[in-house]
Image (cartoon, rainbow, N blue to C red):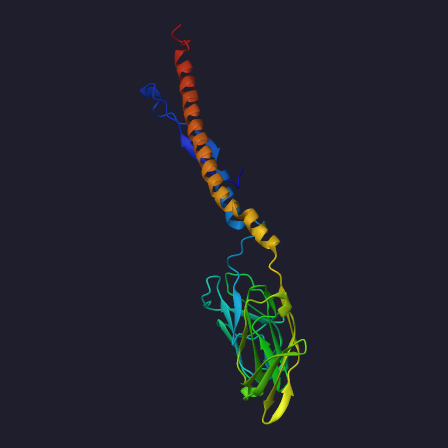
Length: 282
């Protein structure tokens, strides 16, 4: 009981001026609505805790696989997509010295590969973002390695130290897809599971032909279970606020009724007391 808020009210008897100064206090617990609101704010319909303070990490350029000596900037965002004022950065769970919202990696080394996280003073750590740094002349980069049917992804054939790559050919599962004289980003739209596979590219740098390492890209089917799961609980978004209003109204009504009953009880008690004969007068 000590941990719950108590609301005290005073019942005054209006029978006579002799009892105007008489007051009594009755504690009425009012923690129900407050605790309900707290539970609703901390929980979501799917049973998971609502984590609105977790930041996210993005990459600029947006490739999570880069070549040795490339530059990349990791940016820490709040849940509203704005950059945080300050951040704590970790690399493979080791805290870094950088405290700004941007972590600049200049002339990347193989040792810079790994998982990066960020957080600000009022948040929990972000989900990890993996950065891979590889050595080679040519690298196939992809905007995503796992996509869902109907989505799109981009690939490009990237040369070491941003050197120009010519006579570029993209392959999937060993079959040539497209050929360009110059290296450009290729967009694969409205993908299906048939677009899954091992991708690589070939190109010419300084009149020498090079081949990138393969990269597996997976296309998942759009699962109806996920959509059904979301729609299954969507009605709770309307039901829960309605229950809050109803419970609040019932709780308020009970408080008013309790006040009225207590006032009537005190009034009856004092009326009976005033009607008792005075032993001294008898």
